[in-house]
Length: 233
Image 1 (cartoon, rainbow, N blue to C red):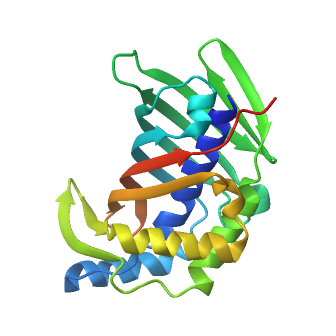
Image 2 (tube, helix red, strand yellow; image 1 turned 180 degrees about the vertical axis):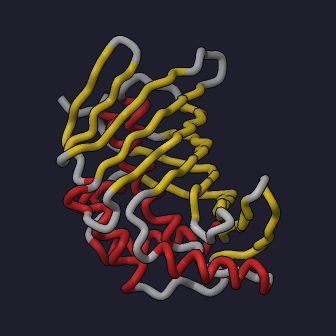
């Protein structure tokens, strides 16, 4: 369970940081639409998002706990509320974890008043997590640091029913450099102690309704994690 808690903290950290860094568009139409959405998003209080992570975990921490290297997929449908006031931050997520040759595990979790609650098959879990602090730091990083101009690219625009979708990719090397810089400067590197994490194949989408509101964010990425250390006793 300690591994699950740490994994969740790392995933949520990536979730909070990535959407705030992808800002540039290459096509004029996508750029103009994004700027309009960006202006509205400055005051966005709620977010509806879908995340799809393909993860590979290795390292001595797993070996010392008798766990073989893990390949897994984690899908999350998440809703966040009160994003402009991290002290009141709420979220609820429905998740599916898939490991090869095993049945998928579905579970739900929500965050309230500094605690994350997980409802998994056969058990309910409650543990502290400073999501408000993480959100504060993520918001500060988006304002305090200059995002590399070559971070995002391959922008395109298409219709999805009555909505428009802005699609983009993020440069792997530049994103990993930027993430380390932001985490190191905002005091969040503690969640990476003993962990080497690399993000790859990052693809995102913004779904925009006819009124110009971003009604959903989608983010897919591969995560390679090497976890070093010994199990706690």
